[in-house]
Amino acid sequence: MGRKKNIEAIVQILILIAISCLLIDAMISKKVNYYVHPRFYLGIWISIVILILFAISLISKVKKARHNVNVRHYMIFAIPLVAALLFPATGVNSKDMTLKNSDITALNSEENIDNKTDTASTDSKIYNEENVINEEASTAEADETDSTQEIQDANTPEEETSDISEKYTQYEKNGVMVINDDIFAEWYNDVYDHLDSFKGKKCKYLAQVYSMDDFKENQFLAGRYFMVCCAADLVGYGITCETDIRNELKDEEWITVEGTINEYQYNGYMVPLLTDVTITKEEAPDVTYIYYNNY
Image 1 (cartoon, helix red, strand yellow):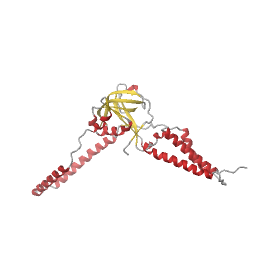
Image 2 (image 1 turned 90 degrees about the vertical axis):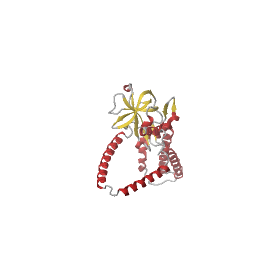
Image 3 (image 1 turned 180 degrees about the vertical axis):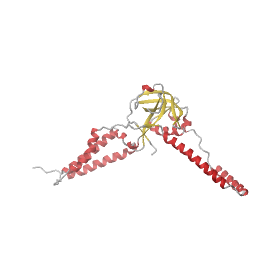
Image 4 (image 1 turned 90 degrees about the horizontal axis):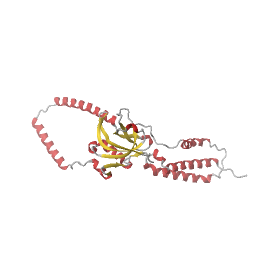
């Protein structure tokens, strides 16, 4: 009669190896891109190594049989393993696509106007209540302020006046800024924050087609999903495009869009608008998300 085995140790080893295999498959197949930022890849590989080492350390316990072993509580680990096999990894395409902070910016603009009005009213009251009594003292204070300001101006370096769009000159081909995924997030934010600097310039990038309820019939969003840390913080951002072939485009299909950057007002906020648009239909890339590199 053969020796009995430690069933609990065997189950533990199988669970550790199964989790390791799933993680290895996700890393090699790049399915992990759907869930976490690439900066965590090193940590995932380290976790895989640790899991395998744990499994190896349990091999010596296999021959040490134990009585009255209950392995049913290990069934909880089977739930995520089975789910990973039954539900393949897929990208997120159900979240809303929008313009960068358009609604928030418009709301903040209204609040700022109200705040400025209230502040101006309050300052006026204070000014009327606190008129200057001693003109000589006021004049002396003004002279001192002017003198201090002159010193500060002499010590303050000139403000940088360079065109922020110039940093993308290195990506231009035949007068068109070719925006690849590695610089897309930075470029996108710069266009929104410094729109005047980019007006009239041509750009080209890979995107998906999305609709907005309040868009015109010839408008759509050419956007991507942005990830800061993991799938939980995915946000879809895009730039409005105008084209006569809008009805030939399907939502969520991949295209390369090329056009000239202009501006238009949306929800009380000036946002970019691509005109003279040229569209080329594309296959979905291996990596569909844009990852922020400055976090």
